[in-house]
Image 1 (cartoon, rainbow, N blue to C red):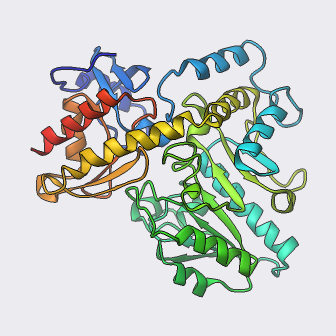
Image 2 (cartoon, rainbow, N blue to C red):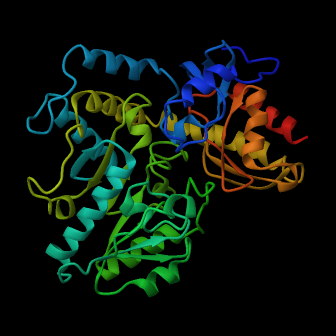
Length: 407
């Protein structure tokens, strides 16, 4: 697909106003109304084309309208879309087996959204603590990290330190101990006989692609094994190829007790999430104790299974690694030229912009005017997460536009 030339001014104000007129303003989207997507490119209602450097916060790791995923969805749509978990459908066992094998785990608990998967992991960890570890009733505690983003349910925002996510939504559920991200000694000091799990993101995406010190994940694994505590890794944004490995934990050769997955698992088509673990952990749940009407539905399983098959080849992980080198080299060259710092792993980067040049939002607005879509986070930081199918040429062009708006 040819590269966009010229500039864009954004979708007509009337379309933007119409889109926002009847919706709660819980988002502040860029003023663009998109109508079509293919690969790494999007087209708005006025026919303007944009290079997608966000990929739905990693939900679109395989790009827009990937033919394999669209084909899997179309085939399933013609057969069966929903049964609820009251019955078993013919796509369920194959999906769970394939995802379990990809993770090297025995059991899969399918849900829909990332936040649901995190809530599931919290419930499983507590129940495991009571029934297996022997923690007294209602005393289970879970260690979490500062700067975390695990979703927006009331339980989850209760242990967030982001005032936008937290303020005004209490009272919050107890049972969480927050320690600094990347500080292994702080985790060790926080563990008590009532601790049932350590819940962390191997890379903090919403925080600005914050990568912990080398050995942090290995240290958590060792501490949890020694202290009889579960290690729950939130790989919702970091997992499934984004960082150049199947899971971000793979960079340290670490296998958590629970993988928490979402985003890319739905192939950019349907919301699919899952918690994956062994029988001695997930086996604590009994019928009626947890569930979801849409979790593990036939359409989700068909698309999710195709995602797993695509990842099993290693093609996308290799592509993220190779293009990640290109991304990092181009971004490093901008340090001192409008960029203060860069953090990256695979095809995923947090870019701290010189505040004198504007906020992250302002930089993203300027990028949009040049045909590139990205997202800001926390002041003057922007995140770049191109679809793993992006071409080398398009990636270079996208970073050229960033250089131009900073120049």
